[in-house]
Image (cartoon, rainbow, N blue to C red; front, side):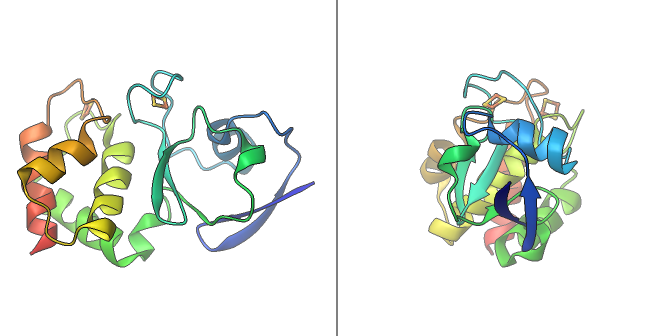
Length: 149
Ligand code: FES
Ligand code: FES
């Protein structure tokens, strides 16, 4: 069995080294807030944090997680930056269909962890890998700025 720390809780999962972390989270652990979009690290829907850094869980073999702490959309609201981002998302009604938004929030929370008051260029760079088919980009940028103040 493999030990994982997810959202502050200890889990034991029976997963081979090469199983993508996204599969582990959704199918073995039952945390389905993290979404499958492309499966090839091109859309950002599957973004989670490893020790606070955003990663694409669809292409990350669980064998490479090691003892790093995993945070998913179910747990990011327990963190300072995640809480601020989620509040701003609600206040500015960012979400449209919602499918991409777990990944957007995870990337935005990680950005605030690195840069407390990001400018447009920093936001665009950090969020460039998160695709939204509903084109909520303008509200996402506004919400990140609101969360930062
Ligand atoms: S599902 Fe992982 S980046 Fe698209
Ligand atoms: S809100 Fe629909 S894909 Fe982003």
